[in-house]
Amino acid sequence: MGKPMDCLLFRHGIAVAREEWEGKDVDRPLTERGKQRVREVAAGLRRLAMRPTVFYASPARRALETAQLLHGLLASSSLLQLRDELLPESSPAQMVRLLRDLPAESCVLCIGHEPQLGMAASVLLSGRVSASFPLKKAGACLIELSISAKPGRGILRWWLTPGQLRAIGKRKTGVGD
Image (cartoon, rainbow, N blue to C red; front, top):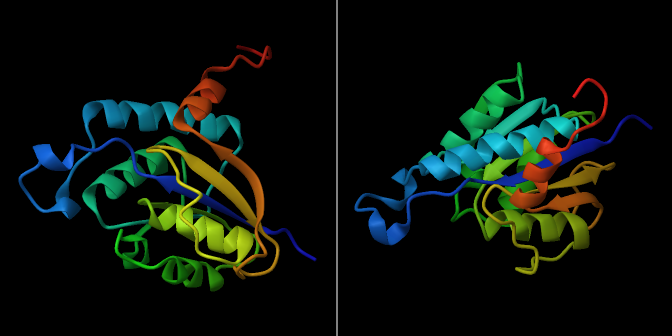
């Protein structure tokens, strides 16, 4: 059997608060603090050897800005694709279907929103939709899929808060640090 697919689910960074934003929700941008946190979290993802071969992002501005930062900082040569399946109103099943056509050895990074990402994780891990798996802003989880994205067949490799990812990124390895 070949290498399993890695599915990295990542919630967008800190965005301008809804009550402070006068435009459409889909147009809310990241704050400067949100951008900085995403940069710091990217260092943790690099330390964890995350090298996405597929970048999918919600077209909502806050997710797109997060994706653009991660794409540049993780030095990916893959294309960044905007996918409606990652919009907040999309169902977890739509996101899971998005993964089915990818090659088994892919490392796919999906940048989106809560509660959709957490519910998609619950489907991949338990086979059922549950709101019990929330991701913090700029938080991530890695799910291994040895059989194409089938509900309940995922294996959780890690689930990390933004603070944990930032700490991993700052950690000294002792080798040339």
